[in-house]
Length: 118
Image (cartoon, rainbow, N blue to C red; front, side, top):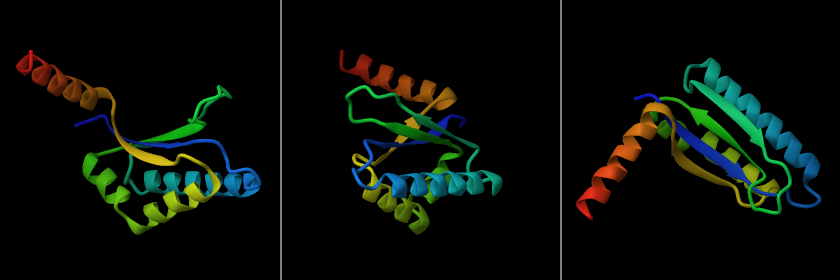
């Protein structure tokens, strides 16, 4: 199914770790680029969020086949990168996400359950 994704979000950079945060960000984007070149993900999209007083400062959306995303998510290399990110930014998290066709499937499940419980 098309539309499976991983949402990787982060909050404000830890004060005093700004240069390390930039380094980790660059290295992480290079890693995602390598995953895309190797065909392990379809694409990735980094997004920085303007200052708004909230906890989310940015995110990256990785798109690909669910089996590939599951393998990446459980790999030691990915886990190490998440730990590195959490050492330079607050509120680092990784969440399964749905877009495209997968979004339609997820909404269909929600609709079916809501009708059962009505």
